Length: 112
Length: 114
Image (cartoon, rainbow over all chains, first blue to last red):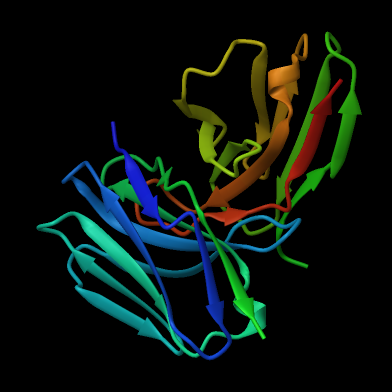
């Protein structure tokens, strides 16, 4: 089955700096890669996703890149703000079926 | 509000008891899921239902029995609770099963087994 690894497990950045989280996946058939943000005491919420026919996608301060050859994808947050502090999860899913396999999560702390 | 809702939010119980968690979504989705998040925040799917039919069962002990009375509801019943069942359980929903639909998560049910 699919295996998704996520690094780093914790990330502390100064407000205004950039944050980068990296994920690798094992199953080359995976073609959908969402990123979720989980705030304390809440459920994960989708913040951005990318499909395998696209190499990069951007939404305001958040961008995701995908390298299908190397089987890795990354989340980039620019101009970080204290409200970006949360746990971020990457995930991967095949075209067939709908099982999402999550990475282990990255706890991001943005220091004012 | 349109959302995925779960009850109860917190559940504290003794080992050996039987308990249920309820989930409802009013997003009009046809697929619902149960996930377990352990103390290290690791998220793992347990079950998925599409139009009330079980489509994913991830080697979960048979003490866990999901039930979907209709497309908008997916409940989770747990028999003979064990200490290791302590976790946060999330319900989610999506539309369709092509593999690219966004999954929307509920707020979670925090289960503590003593």
